[in-house]
Amino acid sequence: MVDNTASQDKSKRRAVVMVIDGCGIGAAPDFAEYGDLANCNTLANTAREVGGLALPNMARLGLGNISDIKGVPASQKAEGFFGRLQEESHGKDTQTGHWEMMGIVSETAFPLYPNGFPQDVIDRFIAETGCKGILCNKPASGTQILDELGEEHQKTGLPIVYTSGDSVFQIACHVDTVPLATLYKWCEIARKILDGPHRVGRVIARPFDGQPGSYKRRSGDRHDYAVPPPRDTFLDYALNSGLGVFGVGKIEDIFVGHGLSHAKHTGTNAEGLELTLKALEGDLDMKSIEIAKTKQDRLGLIFTNLVDTDSLYGHRRDVKGYGQALVEIDQWLGRIMKAMRPDDLLIISSDHGNDPTAPGTDHTREYVPLLAYSPALATLPGSAFDIGTRPGFADIAGSLSNWLDLDWTGGGRSFLPPVAPVN
Image 1 (cartoon, one colour):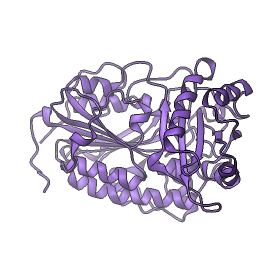
Image 2: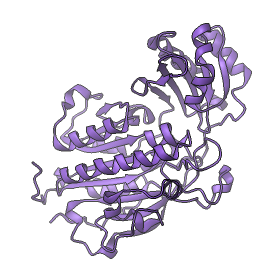
Image 3: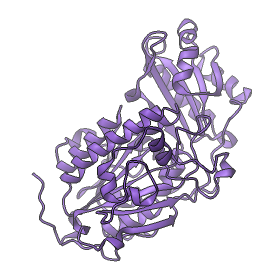
Image 4: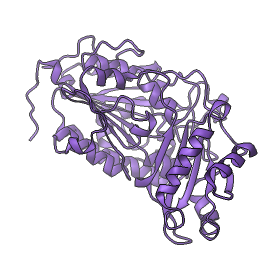
């Protein structure tokens, strides 16, 4: 049972940051610089195409007040903070978005490869891995490329190497053809090769199984080999201040384990949402997922990435699937909100857009929504909850610092009251 008695002790406060991956809410002013259209709007366009979205919990928090989203009405008395954030970093990828939330603005974008990787990079990869050759070497949808080349891969044993609109070097192998340990080793080799001018944001292991015509990616065995953040983030600051920091989903990969005391990879959004709920309820064996031997007074921050909206539906331009994923998140959100103590803060946002109605398969340069809720703030007047449009994702870090009573000065302004009340 959740304790609904609010505490005056800030040292007991907790926060959850939930990232709905690839969930934009309208074209950012610089959309054209990134090759996007003025009408890109992940949320509104998805809602229109599916005939409306049933997101009652996000509507309670004010999602419909940010933009006109079919099926999501504006609330006359929103229960949470609502607004939108404009990215300051150069890029529209996972890393720059997540890093900026935690205080790092990336001035230089990671390199992209719309025509595939240079031959010298491929030649070195083949030589150092001993894989004898590769298939593909072009931008591609992760599922479509399996349909196209999966059977040939199994016949030849050659890895499928491809990229996307992200700065990524992806290697797909069938688990019965190339053992997972070998795939991971090849990714480690690729990570060392891809440095200097070819320092891509991530090398990604993409294992799959199944038969021709029904190949399926094994999301739970995916592994990202990312470039580490260039300096400490708010996560590092929180951890060094004695808070336990739990990364759910691909957070551990995005930050290369930095600033985390605990981490757990997930295979689905449902798994990530369940882990978030269990962590709030104190129903997880935290010792079993500890990744850093640091002094932790308590679990203070849960950072959850929900990737299905991006990887399964956004890139595949699956509008119906995208809409269903949002509905699933909203249903879990109701349970998560009920499990929150008055001392808890929930922030929901995104790292970039991925409009499933847009041409191509790339991310879209958009504003991202910002929703925030705490039972302790429910008595504020409704007008206090509209935070408008704010420059920079780092205001998430600034607000976390305010709520958790930390003296973070690494970037971002709090959208919470100067001294967040706990009644």
